[in-house]
Image (cartoon, rainbow, N blue to C red; front, side, top):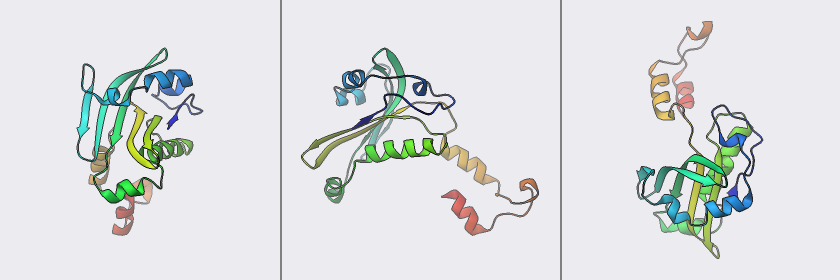
Length: 171
């Protein structure tokens, strides 16, 4: 797996980006991955479906306490089990993608850790931890933004965008 020991980027609203972590502190915090996802006091289950389980909770890493989202990826199809033998896990791919977005100065919740449990090439578990941060959720933002037809020219009060460009924006 991967963990963040310190972040080069200082994002507005990110407490974790200002902190430094020790590898041993992460080892202790992530020692029992199944406990991270267990129901209990202070744990809010955001999603529990056949494809994933997402919880929000406080996590102590050394002397720091963080508000985090923890996502456990689940596979439903046999072909995905086989494909995961040959590629990085979804958690590792999401961790890398999050840091790639941050490197390009695109505001994103800081990916803190990606955990994998493998037996040989077989992936048994894949878990992503990200910092919880306040902001507008993407779906309501896009719904509101796309409710007004995007326009070009004259300080955006001009002609509507062609349908092909509107579709591209929506993607």
